Length: 152
Image (cartoon, rainbow, N blue to C red; front, side):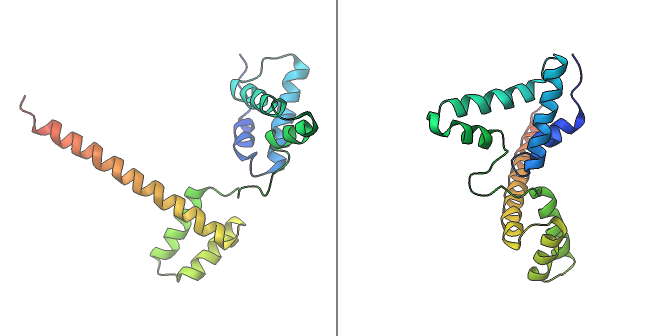
């Protein structure tokens, strides 16, 4: 089996936020079809899911639904392409340097080409993930501590 091109994973990951990435996914799929090669599993599932979801809709909206499911068209607005971890890290770094919150938010928004409200939303997700990681680390450390206390 041929190894999928590295840009496929990136394009599939960014397709919800970027119609050019969605088009790249379909271009890669077209190359596989033309060569008669087996599609990589992720790409096959992406296409099959999009087709199945669209075909379950009324005939009058199937075309539009297919475009939405292939990520070529957005229902309302596309999610911001910026990664919450990068946005959160950048904002935390500026805040640690004692940059005022509004200035830091504005700087991160410019750096990632997103709105300030998106910076705040992504930072909230970042903080939730950090809290979860800390909780998980605490449970792991507690389990390790208990294992150390058991007589051998």
